[in-house]
Length: 151
Image (cartoon, rainbow, N blue to C red; front, side):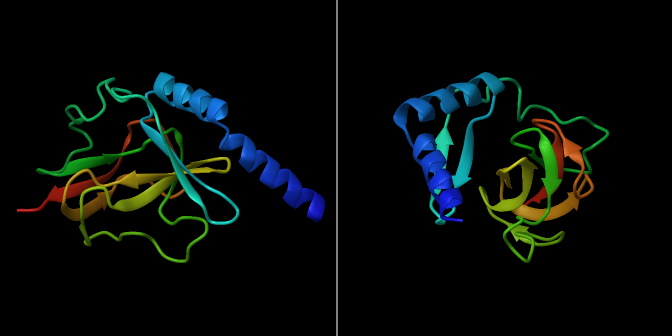
């Protein structure tokens, strides 16, 4: 068991190495992802942000009309992976349909392997709908939630 812990801390040390961080930021930028969050075994949270303009590939532009409902705004998947309404390390969802959300509030997650990325509300409003089933595969930029803007 000690052997496994040493290995994990060695991997964590590699992630926090400046050269590794630079490489990860480059991959994020190439993939059009603006940031990721990494939580270590000890609970340390680190956010790696790609260079400015990383999400300038059309994300946030007009919605597909088949997904929109009234004036609802999308909350999109930050990466491709499986939609998780609840973080695997928690008992309850961050937000529920009908709840009021604030800008940048975490409302769900997308997971791929051990990587869990938050889905954040872009604007204040009411969480109106979730358009994908839990566990469903979503692509980068796919609409996952619809948020009715605050008035």
